[in-house]
Image 1 (tube, rainbow, N blue to C red):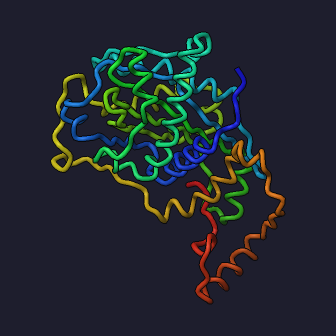
Image 2: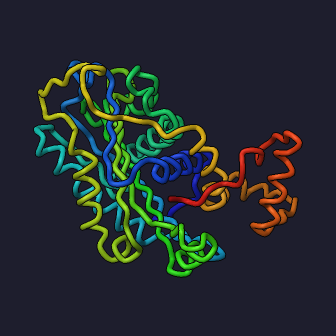
Image 3: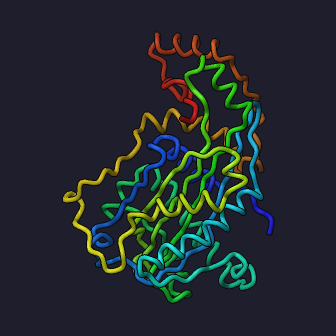
Length: 319
């Protein structure tokens, strides 16, 4: 089944996810849970894992490339590992495969609608994940109806973001930064748990792991095994009661608004246009300034108190 161009909401969500993956400390897991999820009052026991959605972008010196086959390999690996890890913690897990969704038009339509509605909320959630603690995010009636159709207590919605960096891109980064910066590739897994009764996103887990192109493309199963295990490492065991938030000494930090503003512009360009933008292309030509010219322009703008989308500086490269 051919992959379609990303919608506006998927585009925004992926931009935010890649931004967050670059801004937070890599190789550290993060978890955000509602009070009811922590204390086991609203934590779903019977779960349905929906087909993972992956975005794999390869950065080159003069362009970027979407890695379609590699996306499918990462999705297959995640689909195999996530149910195993949840079952090992004592949960009952039902797996919804993409093939099953394709062969059952009714189910496929419900999965599509639930994913589209979730992607809207995912883009907001990634920017301010701490709001999960207060029950800020809801995946809508689409997820509730799908959970009811599957006869489960909750849904697990996996999202994968992978960024690979070519050798030329790394060399150029080192050259332009005088050896102080080298672009890094990574793989990141996001998991949200949606409650059937309310549609609320009860918990959100993610982990980002540095990875080179060889590991991303040649060893996707091994890579996703590591990423999935770390993502779910602190997922509560079935029946486990955690202390209310505030009594636990775990670190759950958001990245700052400054980090986001520095990265967002570059990531928009990296991911390319949405299907809406391709349908109605902008006729305006954009002149790309040389780094030295851009720095001089920025200095002049700050000197006169300039404002606008570029007043905060040129977007930084991914760390």
